[in-house]
Length: 391
Ligand SMILES: *Cc1c(COP(=O)(O)O)cnc(C)c1O
Image (cartoon, rainbow, N blue to C red):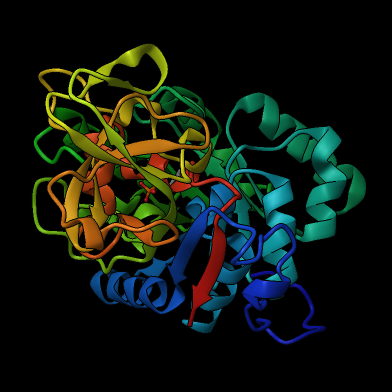
């Protein structure tokens, strides 16, 4: 495997949260986002053990699913991870700065204009079409770049990747000539639904592709794919969300450790009379004398606007002093309201924090209450929390 010459230690220690640029101080922030790097490393090791002797990579696109690409990459490198997947070259630069020797794949592909960026970062593009392959071949031929690439073949998702027919047509060239293809991969569209018929179809088609590209490493599984069937492991698995504590086995107990906790401050507690409405659009009306806690977190902090109470839907909840309280009215950009009427008056005070995710209120539960998935909740958390990376 082509490696960059080692010039610095394989991984740098995670930066101090207080000195991380763009991380507001505890007193400037609306709340606290704690990222448990130990849990992320433990989740990585759980997956490593599961797919052995296959290799386990880590997907750290989207700022490591909102958890901090620098800190997460350093923690996973220390846990033994040697291969990282990102979406963009800008993300590859961040990974390279922390993981000097790692193999880095850029999922969103290759273009001639980005060529120099791949040289600078010694990253590997994931080739997603014949046009990209032609540009890559030309780039390698004209620059003499020694780096490698992955070839992405579509097996039914119809997002990115060469068609199976295209892959079959070029397979013999790829194997005999110097295209620097180090990995052949595909992506599962429905792995989180084990009974979906597309899974078997994709697994079967990828088996054919692997035989066309015999001798080249292969990769198919994302997080739920790893829990679908061992036939998806191939040479390399590409988990993302499971590392960050998302459940890769929906509707079954989560085998991963929770990795994030989100808390926000109470700005004030107010009394609302029976019949009075709360928030934009007056969508929630108090049916009794109510006490409302106004929280310093809104949709700019990843609390989905769709999360608010609507008739006929179970409410989204937040933990106040360990008790679940519903979000009432519309979620604003920076604020939301909780009905805390059922709590003792002394249990809810200004400046106290409430828990949006954590203490048994799981990421997946919060996502489901908001009508979305853990991935979107993680990547929407925003930049206003004071972030603490726990070793
Ligand atoms: C995002 C992504 C992954 C990781 O998916 P998870 O479901 O988060 O594990 C793997 N492969 C590709 C191609 C991706 O785009």
